[in-house]
Length: 272
Length: 260
Ligand SMILES: Nc1ncnc2c1ncn2[C@@H]1O[C@H](COP(=O)(O)OP(=O)(O)OP(=O)(O)O)[C@@H](O)[C@H]1O
Ligand SMILES: [Mg+2]
Image 1 (tube, each protein chain N blue to C red):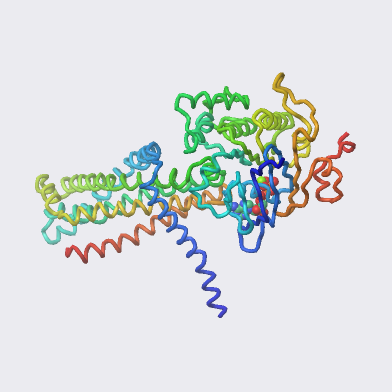
Image 2 (cartoon, chains in turn blue, green; image 1 turned 135 degrees about the horizontal axis):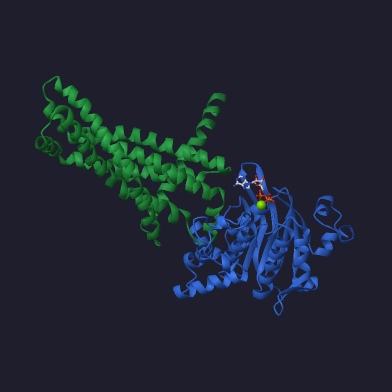
């Protein structure tokens, strides 16, 4: 049974200045239910890849299919309806700093035309989403009053509040301490296992990928339990200077002999 | 060959920028008739651009009117025509100084304010987030500012004109002992319809210069806080200079077609 692809890149290239390719003929497909971990050095094009997937950047070559529709040349006003079904966590959270946390989380509910929620249900939805990221107490705060980790969680709440089938997380753990980073990754795993979402997760840290690939959320006691790689359906991808240099499972990644790819892998025996 | 290539390269940047500016203008204008309308944002901007500018407009109006009465009164004294001060003050204020000074003040205050606000949103990815979350930044940010400035700037100009006349009257009274009734009836009778039209049309046109240039530089900001600072200054300078240039051309048009 072939699952449908929620996102497909076909030889996608992106340039900001003529001749400098930030993405260079990148091709891959993300079937429903898969989680894809994207790694690569700073500046290798991870953020650009996610933005291109959303149609926030335009490809100069190749084609991008998002949720079954070719968005490569779609005009901006036709993209909103498709974007409404994709959640995105920006690298620096990108919360609206003139709005409270609650207003931030309510923003997609209020502004996406395809989402019609009665006004009185809105508050419940917002609270539910903030409870999911354990940030209900900060509901009336402004983003500037939150810590980096709390901002990240508020941004996750905003990304998942509409219940999108596809989520794009840009560096959810960058710049956080190990404990908070673990909490955030646990949230991502929880979101995947509770709502069966498909996700792309950009990260620098191998342990994030490891966690996603080998653990499942246990709804009974709220902990992460070990699971087989098959059950979590996780694929790794490594970018180097805009090119896709590796795509495969964790086992394949650990076995990969390429030096650049190897730098992202913390092998179990070395970690010990 | 080489020289022409150089000139072309040199012109490419400004030409592309002008093209982008026209695109932005076109899209912002088109959105006026399109759903959704962010009326809350329009009200908020009217408050911040319009009501917020009142103090500065009162001050500019009063002092520009006063200083004009001072100099005009003295010049007219040589011809024994001090009594005509009201006429001169009124015409110059309504036709030229009111619209230009108000617009320049609001440009200094709001073109830069808009550029820095939108610029910060741009460099912190809030504009991208907005697009990702289903709103068109032009519809949500640019159009409300354009509408709000378009409504408020003519109103502010009227306030400026009036306060300027009051300033002129106080100076006239104190220095040249003008008669109040004479002064006010002169200011009123000096004006013909084309003056009023010119005095309201000018700020209406400049309001687009202010809001759109502010938004344009803000949305183009890149490179962190420094980029925002640069966008802010550029917006203010560009808006002010454009207003001054346009003012001459609009003045020429009115002189040519109204015959006065
Ligand atoms: N808007 C833009 N204009 C011009 N160049 C850009 C733009 N956005 C990204 N780039 C360039 O694209 C390249 C890839 O950037 P990108 O942000 O995707 O890196 P990244 O892999 O996300 O890095 P990091 O891990 O540091 O977030 C960089 O060289 C960057 O300079
Ligand atoms: Mg990045």
